[in-house]
Each structure stands twice: as structure tokens, then as C-alpha cells.
Image (cartoon, rainbow over all chains, first blue to last red; front, side, top):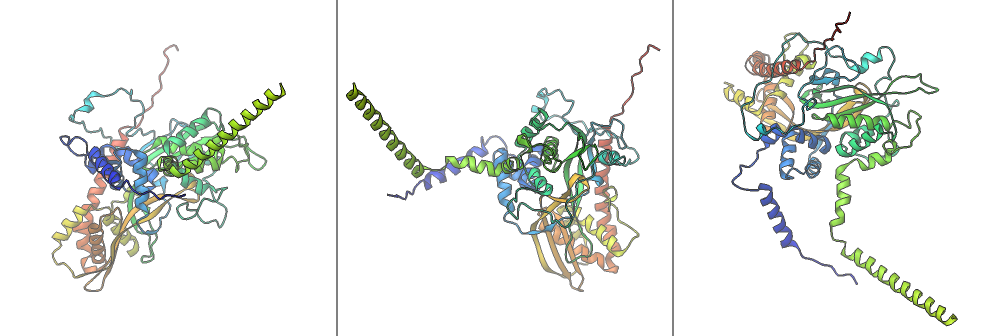
Amino acid sequence: MYVAVKGGETAIRNAHKLLADRRRGNRSVPAIGLEQIVEQLALAVDRVMAEGSLYDTELAALAVKQARGDMIEAIFLVRAYRTTLPRFGYTKPVETSQMAIERRISATFKDLPGGQLLGPTFDYTHRLLDPELAEDGVMESPDRRVEAHEHTPRVTDILGKDGMIEPDGEMPEGVETGDLTREPLPFPLERDLRLQALARGDEGFLLGLAYSTQRGFGRSHPFAGEIRIGEVEVELEVAELDFPPTLGRIRVTECQMINQFKGSSKQPPQFTRGYGLVFGQSERKSMSMALCDRALRARELGEDITAAAQDEEFVISHSDNVQSTGFVEHLKLPHYVDFQAELDLVRRMRSEHERVASNSSETKEAAE
Amino acid sequence: MRNENQGNIPTSGGYEFRRKAAMALLAQATAEEMENFWMQWADKPQVETLRGPEAGLVMVRGRIGGGGAPFNLGEATVTRATVRLGNGAVGHAYALGRSSSKVRLAAIFDALWQEPAHRQVVEDTILAPIAQRVNAELEDRRAETAATKVDFFTMVRGDD
């Protein structure tokens, strides 16, 4: 017999009211504004934009506020929002070589044109909590150095001149750029679709996988060839204009990982590459993405697939935290009927088990 | 147009190149700037809105390895508008974000820019101040970044 159960509306309404109250917290503390979140929790906003796969700082800040700082909930909110808007088209690819650079480092060359620009980094801080930040103290302005503009070539182009490294990745002729927001993922994937999935993938998941490749699970001997953070222009081809208008600028982080490669029958020994590109300022995510991109090229480069990070279906199917949280968290929704059926089944198996046990002991007694 | 000179108003180059540069500056204006410019515009034309302003998304693309085949990086919010002025000039505007008032005014200024009679005024009173602000911000950022440049020096051992 199936019994439909209704109820809980009042409980749900009151729970959401309570959530709103707890989100606001103590009313004697001023409410946090979206501008404050954008300006002062900028890297949280960047993560929500990257994994929400939607560049809009104000919306991401609203999501962080609404989610009470729960990043995956905020990412979920942004993903849901994007489904409400029409899509105007695909932009021209952003040119990271033309970036207005805010940070640029290379771990492979000390002296390189354009130099090592540290920018606003946590590196070299002592990771000691700063009690002064608890107060709203007077801030010193950053130092300035005015110098002639120097061209900042890409490290991969410097290495590429001697053919010591493979070129930027090309796709087979005539292949249309895949879009996982439009079509289900067709495993095995081309590199373009993998990069799209990795760009919106969970930072923690990709970080763990990237770390596993360093520890020997799919070892790929990486060097951080170049990391650059800065703004790039976005241009869109539109029907009504003969030129692609510039929509504005977005901040991205790019990582060029350089990896050892012993060569194959088709290719001489040369360095191979993993690539990371992420919305906002996120070095950890772009480095993890680049390491995973390289590990996932095992099939293309004829390497043995022995580790989790090299298994495309494993990595890409589980990298999306909105999907992951949806399936894990659905377990807390009512499964009363399923569970009743399971309970009934276990009870029947149990009585069967007891009946067999007592029968066999009776048979045993009779035999004695 | 390269990032290094995105704040400039080209004085030479073809019509399309100059219009693209003008539209790029209008896209980088703030809503507040645009509303001030519009308030100060003396002889306001009749404006008919042909499309929008409407918010939507674009799928931003990157390139594999930075310079290779395109891939889809993620979406961004964009607002667009198209207007027609009383004299028939049609203006378009596109800008990242969701500021409909800004983008509608940008479309009006794009239409005004296309009229030879208004172009110089648009460039002098609207585009120039935007360019000045954008350039100053870029210059600040460049100088602040340059101050974090590592100047390597070699330690010479004194046992020769």
C-alpha cells in the first residue's frame, strides 16, 4: 500500500525564516554590503565566479552573502541564476599574451623579459595572524615604480623558439569547440571540453588530484613555467556590427605548467605542457588545473594510465561540486518508502536465516 | 586594440577602428559617469529604443595553452541596447555587467558619435574623460605592480 504523505509546509516556511534570521545574525552588528564583499573578500568572490562559471562580481558577492559564506552553496546559486538569462553568443578567445599584468612569475627562468612581478601575493608572508587587521586601521598606499613599459613575452614562447617545448594545443581540423553547457559530455573527451570542465571544477578536488600526481600517482615532473594574473579584453562578434565590439575587461589567472616527456616514436624528447586558466585571481586553482590537464593527456601522449588523476571519466565526472553536492546531499531528503521496503526485506531475510538455523540444529539433534 | 593603449582615442585609422575604440571606452564607463554626461548633454535628441536594454550571457573563450585552439572558459553577464535617434542614426552598445541605464546611454552616445556634427563633442566631453580615468587606473596598477618586481643581485664570495 502506498500512502501519500503531505505536511511540513509550516515547518519549512519557519525554517527558512529562521535561516534568514541567522544569516543576518546579531542586529547590533552592521549588515555586510555587497561592495564590502567584492572589495574585501575578493578571492571568495573570484572562487564563486570561477566555479559558478559566471563572471559577475556583484552577483557572486550576493551569492556569498545569501549562502552565509558557504562557497559551494554560493556556487550553486550562481549556476542556477545563469540558467535564467539568454545567451548572446561566444566571445573571441581572450588573448592572455596581451594581458594587463598584475602578477607574473616563472619558476623556470630567473631573468626573463618583463621580470618577476610578485604582485599582491600571500607568498613569503609568515602566515602569522595579524591582530592589527581586527581594527580598521590606516592603510599605507602601495609603493609605485614608474618605468618604461617592457614587453612581457610568454615563457612558453621563449622555450618554443628552440623547439624545446610542444606548441600551444591544437584541435583536429574541422572540430567545433565543445560546450558542456549545451551537450552531455561525450567520453572520451577532447582537450577543449576537459579544460572547460576543469575551469569550473572544484578547487579542493582538483588540488587533491594535482597533489596525487606529485606524490607519484601519475607522475609528470612539473615546473611552473609561468603564472600570470591580470585583465584581458573580451570581444564579441555580433551580427549588427562589422567589427567585434569590446565588452570590457575580466581578470583571469593563467598557469603554464611544463612537464618532462621522454618522446615517442612520433615525437622527439621535448617538454610537454599542462594549461590552467581560471576566472579571477586563483593561483592554486589554475596550477591544479594545469597539473590535471597534463595528467589527463596520458592517452594522447601514449602514457600508461595507472592513476586516478589520469582517468578522464573519473576526474571530469566528479570535479563539478554542484553535481557532487546534489547527489551526496540528496541522501538527507525523505527516503521513507525506500527504507521501509529495505527494512521489510531485511526482516524477511532475517526470519529466513533464523528458520534455517533452527532447522539445522533440529536436524543435528535428531541425528545425535 | 591592445590592452596597453585601450584607454586612447585614436585620431587616425579607419572609421570602424575609431568607432570600435569609442564603443570600447563607452563600455568601460561607469553608470554614474554616463548619467552625468547625459545630464550635461545640452541638446538632447529624441531617442527611440529599438532593443533592450537587455541582460544576457556570453560564453567567454580562452585558448588551449594560451595561443592554441579555442575552448569555453565560462560565461559572463553582458547588457546590450540599440537605439535610434530622431534623425535616424542607430547606435549600439554592449558592456559586461548588468547596468541597463549605462548601456542605454552608451548606445545613444554611439549614435551621436556617428554623426559628424557631434563626433568631436562626444570625443572631447565624454570619451576623453573616460579615457583619462581608465588610463590613470591602468597606470596606477602598472606602477604598483612594477614596484613588486624582483631585482636579483649576485652575492660575490670574498675568497679570491
